[in-house]
Length: 279
Image (cartoon, rainbow, N blue to C red; front, side, top):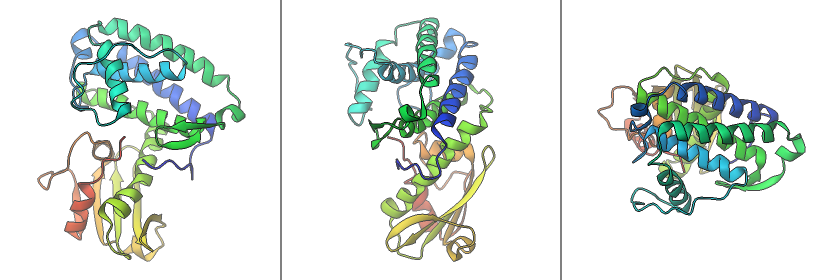
């Protein structure tokens, strides 16, 4: 996923968004029964409990806590070293009751909240390596807000619960996915110069943006540009469908009735099939 901070939220706002997302997650998790903790999600092989275990492990790592020495027996669905590390951490907690995972979640969130709220702007803009390359603590927090929000949505979707009303985090995550559509169009599909694709996202945190190819590079262009006024292809979907496709939670097929395509259908289908930008 692209790791630039153009148009990104100020670091202090990222802390607020992350803490608010944790609070929303906590309120939901505190109401779950054991069967709900064990319910499957769209993340391959992961239950609701596994998803929370993943979030715990990342925040424990950022708090300086040691990683588990446990090693998962099944790594079949992992794709990289980060995925393997995640699976070891998740599998280490699979035999626990949901209440035990919730207690660990609340402990690490309390510690991380105190740490982040005590940081200055200089602390938040210090250089560090992130999963997408060199960046700052702020750029890493951008990923954390997105990841935590997406996983909250994963859990709510799996349990049939109403979606989060955390508008700031939702908009932040969807804006990151929007920026990543430049990679999808420009590098994965790589149509000729002059080609443009309009994404019309409806529902929660709705937006409309156009990615145009110029000089063999894709960029988001303003609505006043000719590529936006007459795009080569347009795709319309609600924000939850956009999130699922951008996060690889589902694979688009021509049979899907929740995506509307106009214009160059071959181009649109190539883009829809390449939208997964999650690490």
